[in-house]
Image 1: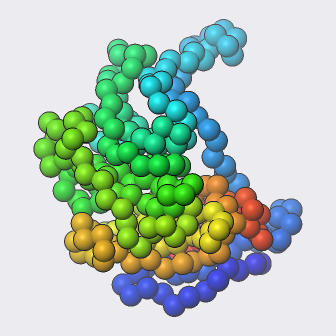
Image 2: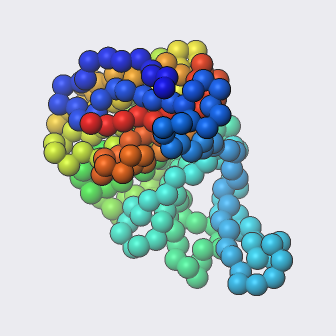
Length: 269
């Protein structure tokens, strides 16, 4: 088994820093189950299935937004509690991060209500998360290119202002500013304290998988902490997954250009 860099655990962190991977050529990965995942370029579209007919007839494409350029993947979450999944995405070439609210099944084929939560250069990915646990879903965007920064887009305090871009606030995360071409961020559960934990992945130069954690007040971005867990070449995916079925979420990552071009499993203890 190949193991990544070790470092001392972060104070109050339930996560250890051990990564494991199959052998260097990744033929079968004896002793560990793993799945390689990858990201791909996506147009902002909605697919609906039909019960019968050919594959072409069974799947129809319905564009819900085509007003920008380079929607680089989507993330889903129910931000308004209506039981329907909403969307966030970063338009990489358009330098915009947006949220789309599911309009209901009868209107799902039409353009969705949307809000531009921030304008940042080269957003590779975006996720929906309630960082400060105030009940309003914020957005975190990961930017590569020359920006090389992770941004926090704070949602308005009032639900009625959610679709008004002027009520959103965008801030850069200081510990990430200009450091690495950031590709992805995922959130890890933490029910023990008010601190929030995130895993961030980037690509070379200086590519890594890193652990980000907040303080008791996540809005004090200058107090967020970072710990480098793994030297990476080009992280293509990050997924929370209980690999060993022990009830704790591990992190599954795929590294495209690093010395271990295979899936990496981060084990939590």
